[in-house]
Image 1 (cartoon, one colour):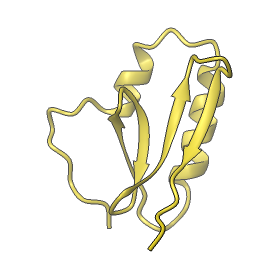
Image 2 (tube, one colour):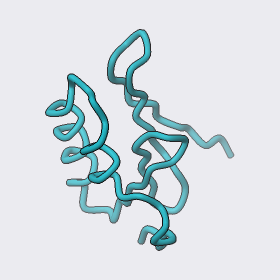
Image 3 (tube, rainbow, N blue to C red):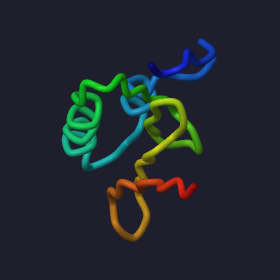
Length: 78
């Protein structure tokens, strides 16, 4: 189950609504796909972009660089 984050952290929806991005519908579609997985995935604005976690962060969107929309996945090596 995702841990609770402080209420001072802006919601991803609010953050994205204030972001002038030409790929808004694609960003929202990617969010729906990730959050639609039934394993209790949470999201927050971290590193100034939407990021996803279960207990630890496993993915972050990268917006507005040379490639307009990227999903960066993190691999934890044990």
